[in-house]
Image 1 (cartoon, one colour):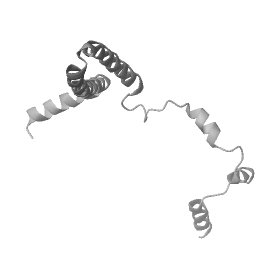
Image 2 (cartoon, helix red, strand yellow):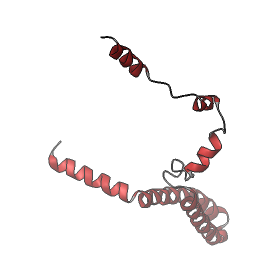
Image 3 (cartoon, one colour):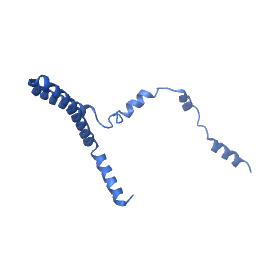
Image 4 (cartoon, one colour):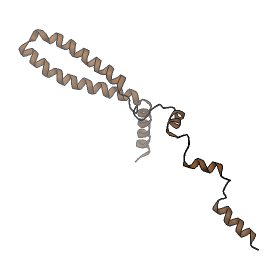
Length: 127
């Protein structure tokens, strides 16, 4: 990989991470527009053949539905919104840690020496 390709790829990744939400919204808008255009073409052909006077109101209704879907998509769908739960850590800690547990009895006992300290103290006592 040449240095130019590496610089170009890293610049594109930096821009993509910086404008992630705008790019995501753009893709959602394009996807909704393509799907509704595809669906409306079928409806427009049917209305043009059978009820041509309903073609105009159907276009207005389709426009309202598309903008409503876009507003809903922008309001509801956010990249990473499922992973970025905003929860207070103290609230979670208070809810999950019980008041007393089986290890609380150790707090009342005298401090125990570690195994290393016990071995070293035995070696020090030997001449």
